[in-house]
Length: 333
Image 1 (cartoon, rainbow, N blue to C red):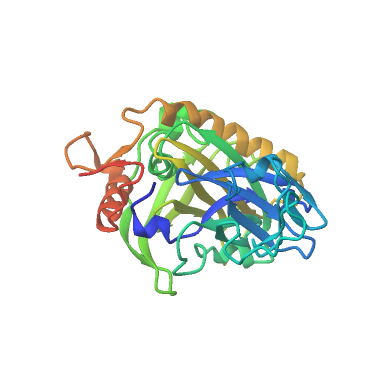
Image 2 (cartoon, rainbow, N blue to C red):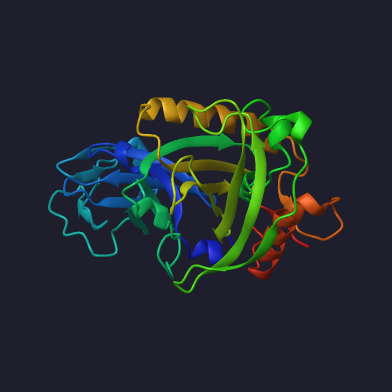
């Protein structure tokens, strides 16, 4: 179980909201906890411990009937508030209030369902680009990864791998130099703090899913929560705003994760499936990289690996995790 208060009491993505239809129960895993996720007829989302308190049967093996969760083992029925409404073996039993499912907090935001296994102390991570009507939003993933969540975030922040892992799309081996860039603290204006990298330039053979021919592209990266990072860039032939790609990692266990990506783009030409296919291609090139880094948990002790100037954002991210006292998915330093 997670002993990091910051992760335990924060929101994490667990499901695509558009795919959570009433009438089905889905099992998801978050911070080593199995959760039964379902939507009631009124549209509310529910996240319960995936365990009937009677004899420990998984709720996710049961069914929804008349807007109640019915346990597959003995047919106990639970209402949307988690209270046991009936026990078929004892039809006349007035069930006490203690007969109830253990419930977690759940909310919808940015096209995803988020859950918190503790006591949420703030809103889900801020993503203001999602509110920009000039940008089109598409949810991508989830991507199952046999690696810790911090490893996935750090890979997302790394520009030096573009020329080798994403050659011909995001980089070119003949133009692999990473120019110096700026890294500093980030304040989201809502009491949250993180880190930001600006003036990040990279040569890209393919600047988006439509444009080929290559160009210098300016990025910025900001880490707004330990497991959330947002990349922005200025779209071609546009001014005054930025496109964004946000990464939100669902920590299933210390060494297994699901990655979710939300696009906020100016491309209104291609279909959602086309945009997802492009993002799938990029992420599936990253997947074997992070799965084969040793150890799978991110080492935080200085000197364990050999950083260079291009790794400034990675070093800042690791320092941020140490300052936040994050241990889950990390080798403490």
